[in-house]
Amino acid sequence: MIVIQKYLANSLRNFNYIIYSEQTKEAIFIDPLDLSQTLPLAQKEGVIPKYLLNTHHHPDHIKDNHNFLNIDGTKELKLKDGEEFYLSESEKIICRDTPGHVMDHQCFFLYESDQLKSVITGDTIFNSGVGNTRLGGDVKTLYVTIKEIFATLEDHIIIYPSHDYFMTNLKFAQSIDGSNTEVDKYMKKYAETVNDDYYLNTTIGEEKLYNPFFRVLNEENSLDKFIEIRSLRDQW
Image (cartoon, rainbow, N blue to C red):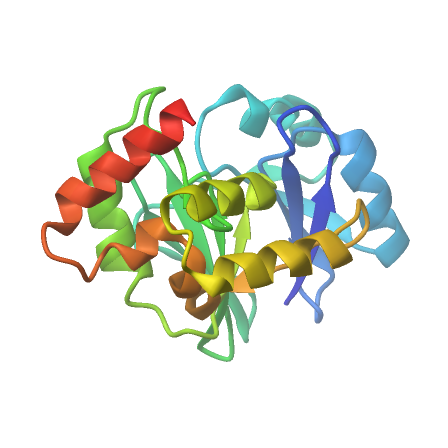
């Protein structure tokens, strides 16, 4: 299973994703915002646009749904929590309900030969951050989602978020955890490597090093601290 990640270079710093089977070349387009940027990538790789998935209902995640579904042979997938969808016999997606940013949010867990490799995290988890809860979400619910679904994943699992807020989130992390040398390390790594054609993808294990919303989970009164950090980030 191949993940194509496209940075859209827009004001919201969106990523769009195409996931396709190495065996069938059939592809899932996730949260299509700008097909003019993603369809050429599919064509270049000889990929067949087939399925549509949305992580949630916000406009910057569903804008080009209609245009995608006007392509011959396409269909929208509506998966339930825990439901599996197979792109091929050995390539599958498992949908998980991940409420918090908004209550209808879902994330998509990507498996090859029954081994979890990566997760499309939408607006639930960003690099060094988590989604806000100001537009139909709930911070206590988000805490449970992060703690019970994501913090328990193996360290090598790659995350694919819907926005590039990495440097801003690292600067926020630095403002509340100035002694954490991992923050400085990743700020330098981001500055040296990221451009419009290359992004610094991270793992769950890396997020635990510098993401304040992960780091707080093992502390006493972690829910209260999570809420406090989310409020600070909202005002930062």
